[in-house]
Length: 199
Image 1 (cartoon, one colour):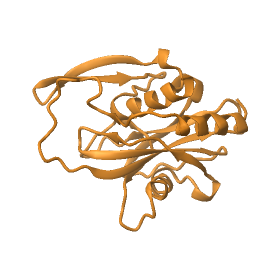
Image 2: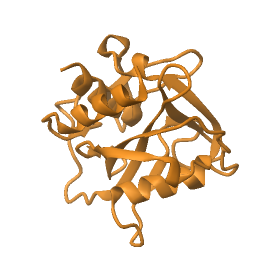
Image 3: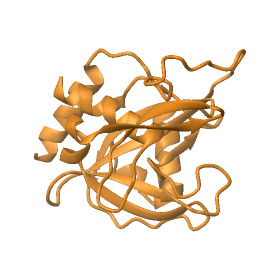
Image 4: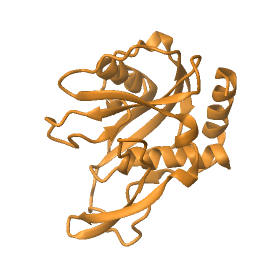
């Protein structure tokens, strides 16, 4: 796909109707915490174009982190009061985490928010960027890597697994790539994108 084709495909995904996603999607018997308050957050689904096949930027979180150590994630984090919107938060976090210059990024739009089991409402921001040299933020990011968009945009590459969580079985999507085990919220967000791109 050319850069223009990627942008068009992402724009179509943004425009495609669809409900918000959730970490509870595959666990219909899940009991949601009473009175839960979701904290707003945003992640950047950044597709690198202009140098070979389009690729999505992912990170591997530091093993020293208190929350989700060693897990694969999209660049992003909490939306701060100073952020103008979800896109601004995602771009700020990407700059902090992987040194992605926000002025080089073309924001396409946002998908519906994703609710996590950790009580965040995460807005995925779809965007494109030219090839860049990532610099992992040492305290938070252990590694930055790229996965072909064609792999993540194919629903056939996703599988469903389950594990015990807080005394109950919880099912979730996975979309492994090479040595990387992509699962949970990141895989669910990418599955939502894949569904919109193949609908």
